Image 1 (cartoon, rainbow, N blue to C red):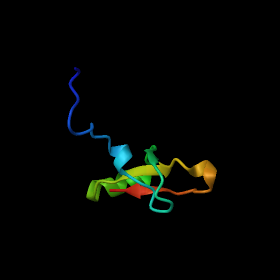
Image 2 (cartoon, rainbow, N blue to C red):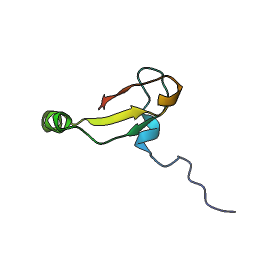
Image 3 (cartoon, helix red, strand yellow):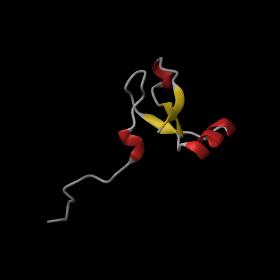
Image 4 (tube, rainbow, N blue to C red):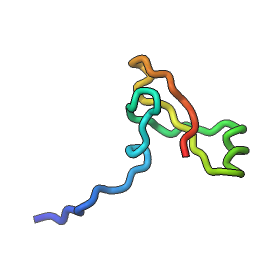
Amino acid sequence: MAYQPSTPAYHPEQTRVCPKCKGPVERVRRRFIDRLISLITPVQRYRCRAKGWGCDWEGNLR
């Protein structure tokens, strides 16, 4: 019998959801302004993966 961990591996992209449609999101490159904001408080830029289905959200999440 193979070892199976009791908790799944931690994948940050899977724990983040789109604030508009609650769909999955993916990380994208940050803009220059995002990098400046990250000097004060860390932020990462995400885009909704359901973009082709009507959701056009892209933005920063902590």
